[in-house]
Length: 282
Length: 305
Image (cartoon, each protein chain N blue to C red):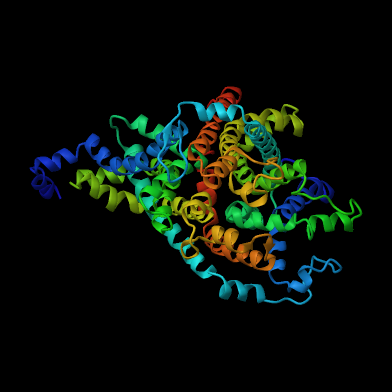
């Protein structure tokens, strides 16, 4: 919208001031998280000094977090669960999306409606019956419990995103492969899917960050420290009664966010594409 | 090539059967559909069944019909929870919509480091909610709140309020944190929507004498409506059913002032061990949610241009 271009005053008013305000609002919590995590307790709980800066930075909270708690185990659990759930979701998502995007078959309208509806079912509607089911299956306190349930949140989303992507790929190559005698399965796996790598990255990144973010199922199913994920571990074990270990909590919050942020930073464009795929259709 | 083509033709009947479009499709769709039926469809139905039972945890259930829902109806906390959920959803959604649109319009200008700034702006949405909410809890801490330090420093209030201790302020705090987390999603999606609007339209409108407000009102807004609709629908559903934020920040307190359907159901079912009652509270969020979505669909009617 560069129709008009006033002087620097107009530009400051229309761009830099609002943008600056939004950025402070958005980023300040991260700054606060970071400086809290490197403040010694003597500064953290001293009301007399200026709190916005650190006078004697220390890594004590990080060392304590890594040596005195199970944070490393939680990080590994979180990563493992997210990776496996994402893989399952991409496979199942593809199996749903390919026929829906490419083929005519009885029941396709029903299936695509069901996929959309499943995506919109909020988790709190399912957690009580699921808790009971997981209990009856004796899967409580196993990573299997969350590896099984996370894909229920991710598969509909992946299918829906991939469907959109699949439709944007021209059909001619598949037709050519079919004429050359390839079966439908060969056509799909050897010809079609390799063309869809960007779609898989978008869906994969999204699914991965969603799994890292999941809390409710992990909170209910995982009650032993050695199977916990980072969010549940931080809430359940770094807060002891009324005592909050703020330095360690902030270190955990920062360290727990880093893997997601790093992966995200490599694939920002894919992430944004996935984020906006559903809402914005040309 | 044509030779192999001819040779491959007389394949087994099974092969020919699986090559049929309808058969192949269902072979593909079958496993994931079965998975979703078992782990979404079945729990959903089982949840309805549970809500009709008196079912203490680790005991056999007893069918009680609609007794749980009748009990909800006579429970003052249940109605408070319903009101809380509406207030939370309404204000958080409005603020995200207006703020997100403002941010999207701001970012839809040419400036340096645009992509980097956009990437940074999305951080609240990327970072695990529980972890960022812990940071907010520390920012709103009764003893060492940085917000209150700022209020004192600038002379606005001394001492600052107890953000999470006062019922109204606790709800406000929750709404602010929800907006903080959800705003980037709105902004980035709306920005993508803005970028699909052809500059020609603005030019034509300018030639017709439209000022910047008129251009926004009669070009931007109508064309953005379908995107706003979809984003808002998602936001309403997930705000209405929010759990994490409240669980971490207030646990529903003080005095149930910030309990939402999800956290109240959790308290009853997981802390109280009453699975049947909990399931009835969770299910109670379905009709209002459906009504909101239908009302929004009617009101905003995202007809394709």
